[in-house]
Amino acid sequence: MSFLSVPISARQYLRDGTHAEHVRLNRHPLLSGITRPGYEPASYQAVLTAYFHFYREIEMAIDRALAAGLSSFTYDARRKLPWIASDLAHFGIPDPEAAICLPGSPVVQLGFADEGELLGALYTIEGSSLGGQVISRHLAEQHGLTASTGARFFHGYGERTMPFWGEFEQFMNAALEHDAARQRALAAAKSTFAMMESVLDEYVVRNQSPSSP
Image (cartoon, rainbow, N blue to C red; front, side, top):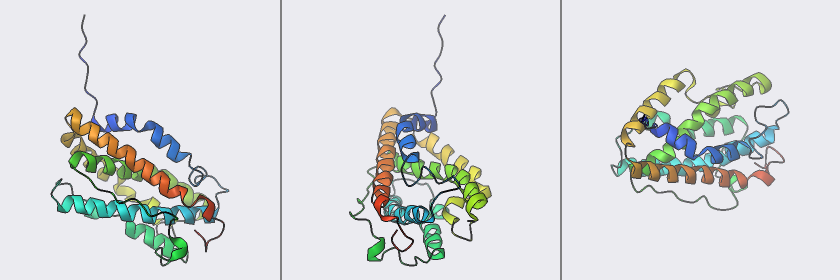
């Protein structure tokens, strides 16, 4: 008797391929306690500052890729940088470009050669929005942080999270039908996880006070 193998979706392919990177990021010193009662405000502000610089670079790269016609995916309603800037302003950090807020090393400039690489990066940050819903609930329950009081980024799409994710997943599954495209997407997703972790690393020793993210 023979059995036909059922091809896995692009989402499952990327999820399986980035499992180790996802686990390692969740265990990062600045993120591992974010859902716990004793999480320090300085650590939270350091995360926001790191994410500001990470998302600024990745969203500029997304804009360049879409402007070059690499994909028909629409990103405008998904921009996260303004959310992070709003959260930082809530904590009295109106200028994340100030010298005291900059990472010790320049953030690596990203570039995508094709749609597979672009979607691999998008998979990483759009997937993070799913996990952000769990974090958002803990921030509200334990620290009183809401979408209007310092947790706009983790609130993300709110009630629209699943529809937004479903839209992206459908687009991704259709675009990444071939092995070569999936492999490029996976490599880009891994690189995006590594970049996020690297930027967070820059702030591990700089989170001792709200004025020193």
